[in-house]
Length: 72
Image 1 (cartoon, rainbow, N blue to C red):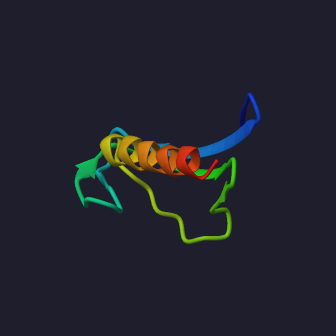
Image 2 (spheres, rainbow, N blue to C red; image 1 turned 90 degrees about the horizontal axis):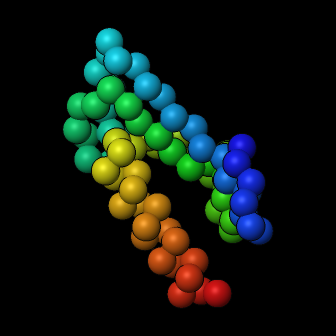
Image 3 (cartoon, rainbow, N blue to C red; image 1 turned 90 degrees about the vertical axis):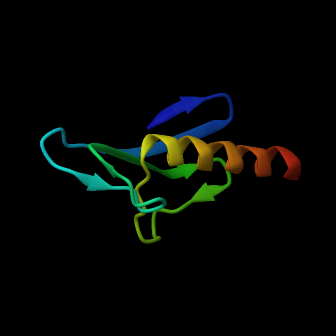
């Protein structure tokens, strides 16, 4: 868990260099995937785990932060 100004974020990532994983968003084969579980106004701890490749993870994070900035 990482703490910063008014934000507590919990990330989950998997890095398996000798095994091919697949991004749940784009389906691309990768060796590393990640997901945000808990962050400010975001809690997916009880949801089905969806892991993203680094590119999809970055895109989804940017979209989520954009929505947060528009809402508040």
